[in-house]
Length: 462
Ligand SMILES: Cc1ncc(COP(=O)(O)O)c(C=O)c1O
Image (cartoon, rainbow, N blue to C red; front, side, top):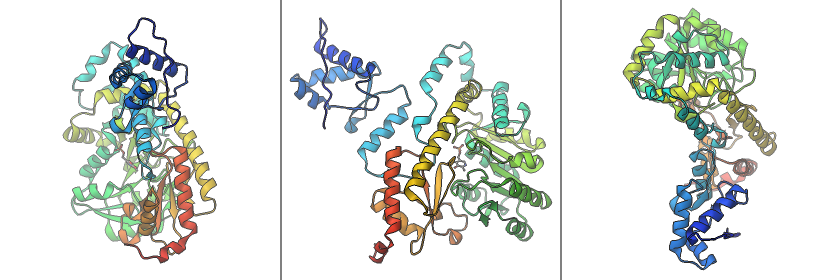
């Protein structure tokens, strides 16, 4: 390790280990040692200072107790930060492994709200103990009010009493499917969709069918043909910045699809997990056709997945049944998490976090455009991922293997295809995830290199 940190001691009367800790504290406070800096090992510092290893061990233990540093075992000891513990882990793991992981569908944790500040705010309030209790059926009113505010933020005004609180989109989806679908029913989904949907469909004994899409979303004629032939009960759609294709269904297309659905008595399950990301999104299906749409508005992608908070609104006659199903599936959603979500929505944290995420998305989009140029990456400056259509002779699987061999992890189209035979040759590239901007650039450069040298395919693969 180069540039080993060495304490500038001001020992006075204090024991040596304490003087080392104090020096560490001073260097961190002055910015000389920035957050996430890797510190020398106990032995390295002991050798450098010509002191016993035990003295350094005590100094680091004291510093850790004061929250100045943290240890990750073999990965080393690092300067802490006011930011979340997750960021520390991510950086440490990045230093441990050379693999550039472009499979994580989210933005880097450096944009997350600061949990420490939130806990401090919470700790100054007096009514916290009630958050440890079971809440009444349907949850607390101010939590549903926060949900209504969030849904208004997405473009639809709803009354707080119609908001159903769920433990994430996954829970909401499970509940909706169990309410509206009977075993053997057909569920339509975009040809590439949220990868947990097939597992949920299987759980409920449902058949999935893919509707072909173009760059505006599901093709109306194809949807209508499916409605005629299969008489599906529901359409699952992730219409804004679809995971994985990044496509946003246009307003005109939404209206066409909603009108076909209404004609054929198909219910729409609208997964709006990314709907807050674009600054000017098309209207929600839930606004266009509220009487047939279940809106699932999870906070996972735009605020924090670990909160497990999602707000759902269905056609008005379904609210009570949906609430019962929440009770059956998870009893209640954690009031502590709902409280944090409500705080973030009302105190501006949600808006600030969104602004940070949008900013970061744009920067990463610019990196992707700069590196991949004219190559066929479908994405938007507000998306967490890009969809790279591969030129022949690549197949998605071979491309993913080649990228992995060169240290970049990607997801093949097949992982998202509702019908595997229609998967096509594309890969999803997550532009955020756990990678730093620099790692992203490196990963994209490797991808470009592979794309530009298809001759490597000539060598046989195992
Ligand atoms: C399209 C989509 N919907 C839902 C989810 C899951 O959301 P939640 O964490 O709220 O269950 C994800 C997670 O990646 C997703 O990509």
